[in-house]
Image (cartoon, rainbow, N blue to C red; front, side):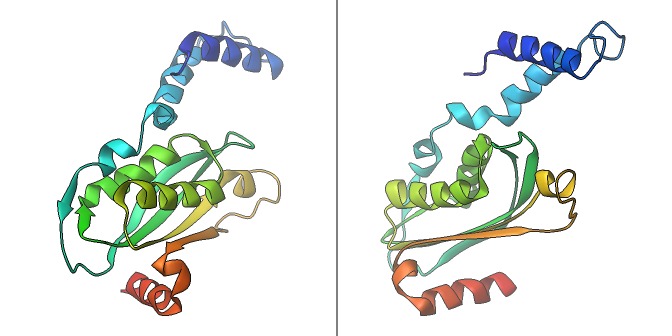
Amino acid sequence: MVDKAKIEEAVKLLLEGIGEDVNREGLVETPQRIARMYEEIFGGMDEDPAVPLSKQFQAEGAGIVLEKDITFYSTCEHHLMPFFGKAHVAYLPDGKVVGLSKLARTVEIFARRPQLQEKLTAQVADALMDYLKPRGVMILIEAEHMCMTMRGVKKPGSKTVTVATRGAFEENAALQETFYHMLER
């Protein structure tokens, strides 16, 4: 649970640390605004992916299910700067499927935490394997990191791509090729 009072105090200290006057008209309510914003953007800290993934339906013989181009926004745990992009989530059902919105919701739960893209990719894959029990999962995430584009090396437009495979996707190159082919459509 987000402690808004601590965040407000930290923001005041940060503003003072950069030489700002925390009593300046434009900054007086900034600590409260930041605390409310952090409550929203880090809301995944208090959410369990088991909840959205628990609503399942029988679907014998279903082939690969792919939800692509799931837009997400996250915060890099190293610099507390945003990274954002698209997640592509595929699984091979083993008799049960989950509502498509639940795949996007699972991405959102993990994205709304201080995060590394590599961990985000693995966490989504592991959650699907743990709670949906499919024959396999493949996740591809592509994102732009503000810590790379706005500071440091300053390379706007550069994207980081991460992939996680589990189960049948890990063992079967043809399934992986099918996944990549489906992304092109």
